[in-house]
Image (cartoon, rainbow, N blue to C red; front, side, top):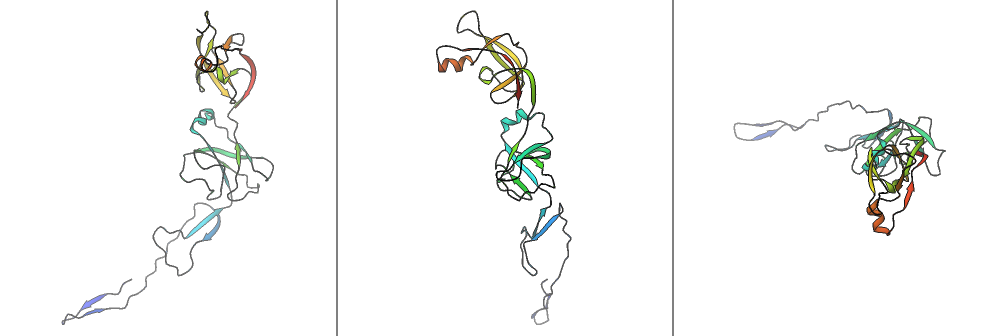
Length: 231
């Protein structure tokens, strides 16, 4: 700390030699792991400088989905499947959860392996016995839902993708179909489950009227059918 100064009767200023003061602070890591020091003894640092980091003993896998895909994850499962190119066989990670978007999240940090850089994050815990490395690129597979023996129709035939939608059935006159509201279930990007509002015996238009009119002069008719669907 700076030395003390004094002034005598003649106006002469005297400065005492400065002394060095030390203050010891205990820093607590947020998780256990390997400590990596970023500074050496005696090095001068500034406010905000990183002096150390902790590499956790466990890893978290992260993948990215779009906000629109969140409609298909209303019932988030507890696990996901992780695939690593040229790595081990696909394995299951646990405690699947959603994290808010973070800027500049492309590279893995703090023991996280990253599948992409932007959007909404899905995180899960990698099993401790599974050998992985910091910064691995992964693919995360999440089953949004499963259903068997349900009524499904092509996505091209449906207005809407979540909870409430509509299909069109042939009308009394060509070019004048009837709009019918339906309750929607899960989808596999090709077909979508119809929970109510339509029966398997009813005919529907395979394409929405506005889409079909923009592509051809004739609307194709399709039949609703019983099939399995997996999101």
